Length: 160
Ligand SMILES: [Fe+2]
Ligand SMILES: [Fe+2]
Image 1 (cartoon, rainbow, N blue to C red):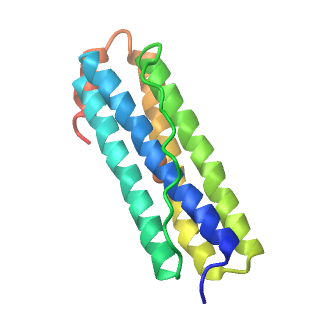
Image 2 (spheres, protein in one colour; image 1 turned 90 degrees about the vertical axis):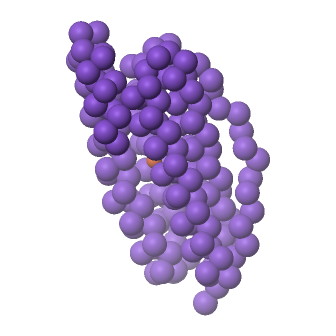
């Protein structure tokens, strides 16, 4: 059974959004690198790679189900932030936004009576819990210790 047109379109939008997330984190990585925060830059680069992987995974699924991948226009990303705390607040907010998008995909798959797609995106619903948790924890650490222990925090981020 092939995907319905509605689902095919929605998944394509999500693939485009995952690539955009990757661009956003890449831009943030460069911002941190310029600021001498190589640990945070490294973490964000890894995060960007993960978003690319999400996009590829969704694209393979789409193809497997008879769909055609159509990459949407790559919107510009911001290139500067107020400070490091602002960057990670934005990461957290972005992940929360993505969680909502994934939830909507599951809801649409339900409405389209496509169990396989529902199941496929449930994995991402779970993944988003981690994504939000990790980003939120880093944002919190920066808020608490960013002024006094920035050097150590930056070093820790290298471990990813
Ligand atoms: Fe993602
Ligand atoms: Fe993410």
